[in-house]
Image 1: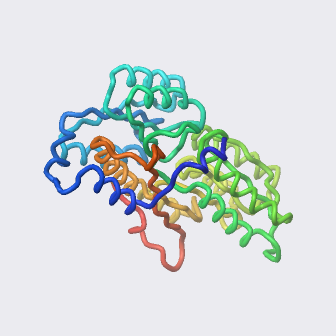
Image 2: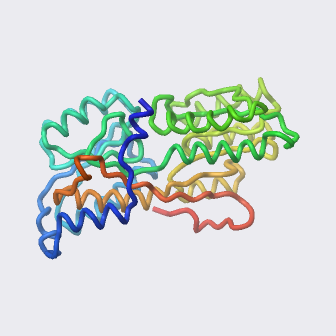
Image 3: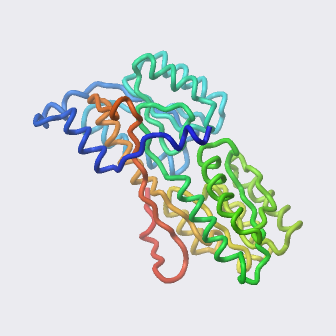
Length: 329
């Protein structure tokens, strides 16, 4: 499964846009701006009401307003069963393009394959299925998992004077980000036997569940050195459990996320220590651009999946910190 994900065709944003524009637009820029007017895009996110998806939709709709197509949002509200039903209904409506936000690598794979076979292009955003589609925009999860693990080793490993104990809190164990980050992190930890992963429990993306998991782990391991949360929103629950225990100066709380202003506030409040941001606002712009191109007929070479990797920044307190590192709605 992971092997399939890693084989997906990755090219840089600049290369994607140049090649696609050259193939589709040619020298007729006016045609590119008018040919997609009236087309229909349907977005099925895991949930709205969070900065990640709200930021994406804002940027996608800005593109739609410029070029005259529509973006219709079908909110699954963290209900996987409802999401599958919403996607099935969306496919039956024959839109020109679907944007999907996969809760796990498997749950929507059959429907993504069905949509593509019926001529409906599918853009996967940030969380991949193990089923390739026309395009993917999102974070390099392998890199994030590896870099955070390396930082954990630096802070908690040999000669640090600390226990080496680490708790991992995924959103879903079978979500693409968790699969790839855990795989990368464990490869690093295996090279450092002084690092011990004492917990690897999923929070189902819920801050309160992450808080409860962390409180239990801290009771069992009061000398815990670090927590690696797979999304900043639920990891803030873990960070609050650390603060409740009075251990905010002893337990490092790592997170990944879209890098909005709430993440910076959590850093300032010592709820999170370090956040690897993939910039959801930028992802929304990239998604809007690739939607424009896909609606004009852009495709990867030999049918390969177009892939835009989100630039990444590390947000942490201390020298170099600025609230400007985070974006605002």
